[in-house]
Image 1: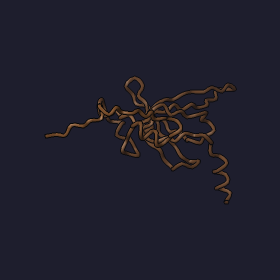
Image 2: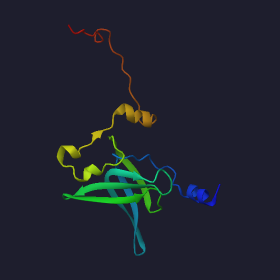
Image 3: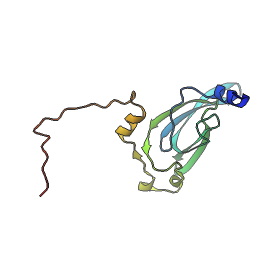
Image 4: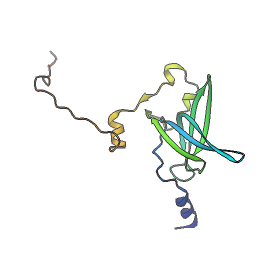
Length: 144
């Protein structure tokens, strides 16, 4: 391995969740004020993920505060990030959701991700409950 690859591998933060555009996330960032250090939380929708999954990867998180859109770009593997929680996921068909900047009302609403799709991503997290159907209920009517 080269020195660059060794450095990059050493600086990856283990246990980082799979973050995708459309996810609602809580980013806990360490803020240093004088000698004190505190954690500040920023919750919003991930509208972009850039630079792959390596050390230099970043996410753009957007939220609306008092009718004003606020966007912040966070380096995913920065030591200033305490943790990132994925609160919810949405079904999106774009890798960059920049259209949310101008979308209002119903167009700005994202659909929740399907349970079957979420189960395929993390089978140990979400468990699907199987139910048996009674034979009387399983009768299908044919259209005439």
